[in-house]
Length: 76
Length: 184
Image (tube, rainbow over all chains, first blue to last red; front, side):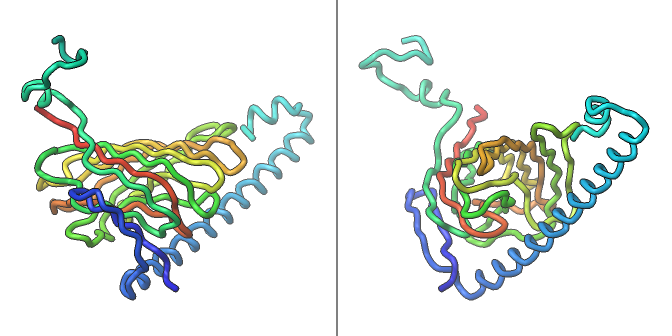
């Protein structure tokens, strides 16, 4: 079963829910695939940034900075 | 009668009604839909519009997007967009954007709690760039806040009579309202 789409016709106020057509389903699959790829890239970038921040925190703590000073610098 | 304060039994004549600045032209509720399209809501009656959305998605932290639509078909290329995202703990807003986008990002949406978006659609029926700008408050599944300010336009001069909003994946459930803004 294909996903459902909702269409509101403004002049009549009628809301229709129906199954996607084949063409709409192809476009939908492409869109979802792109979104999943972008989401994976975003998660990977966030993970990398967090690792860099943690590394910086460890190095700065080794220089004697307090937790408050580290938080102010790293904003995490 | 002193406009805009009316008393019971007052007659609303043309000059009173023509002074109404915001007119609801469409409202509807979608239930577990992969997309929600509104057809024929942008007309020559109004140049600019306000759109509100209040709803949930089936997943968490899912992108929520907008596309213009003409005669029942979405425009899928040549969007230009920028957005800033804020949440507690972030030092500066995170800014992203594209000059080759396939949609305008409205923000992010989650399940459990309803998120809200309101944005202006400028000149969709006029032969110039159709612009969208607004904001979104994302109520995350754990009840924390995530907020967006968005700007975008479609880089052509085609007239559009509707739009589609949709999650990046999964489905949405919620209510959309479209209001025409009277210029004169």
